[in-house]
Image (cartoon, rainbow, N blue to C red; front, side):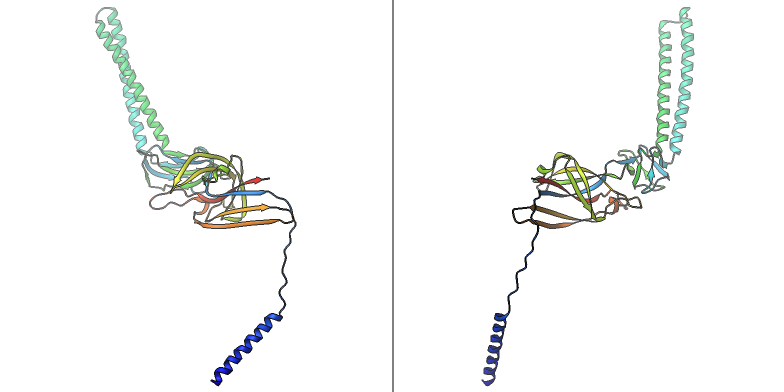
Length: 338
């Protein structure tokens, strides 16, 4: 009991000391932060994510089937219009051309014989040695022989064209973005034209294809300025302009979005490639106001997730299929209100 009394007394002494210490301590002085009052614009931002693509992307294919014999262009290579990109094995095309040439020579010989018979038959008809029916049959045979010559000549032209198609040439000046064939690979162009190369015409002129929600599409107008960032250069802000707001809406999981396309001028690295890589998506909102005697700035940023894309916006060829992966970017449209 004596020990319990001593312990209770000690606790009371400590509590009294703490109360006395807190009561005599001076309260902390309030800290004030002052800023200069000014006037500004209320800016409404609409943020969205999109993909960065070349303005002109050409898919180079082939109209004929065959085995790849040579490849003259590779990734990131600058090419000119008409430059040879690849060549298919021309053996079958040369054989078909030789056959059609022989058929043309045969048809021409038949035409020469038919014309000689027609001239001879006209002479005999004037001398009344043959009937009118025999003359008409000879004339018809000459016309049929002439038609066969034209048909054989068209076949030769087609085979020559197919032989020319065995050499794949670049249709535009640009940079090879993707190559989907290798030497020895067989390409078949029976039902669908296969894509062999993808060429970006001008990688300094890019466009961003993004989806904007139905609630924000009313604030987007053609010609509005656009600012966007990419993860490859997080400290650099690029600008562009809205070029097109498409009217056809897309509904996914009961969310209605519209495709907005805007143009921008991209950049190049020493290796000749442009931006890309992994992108963090953020939805931002900013409000600036200047009431009398006080100015305030409010900012709120909320991250919604991650999206990934390979460098330069393109995926290398896989074992099953090849498809271009486009660069991720985030863009915002600013609308100033007085």
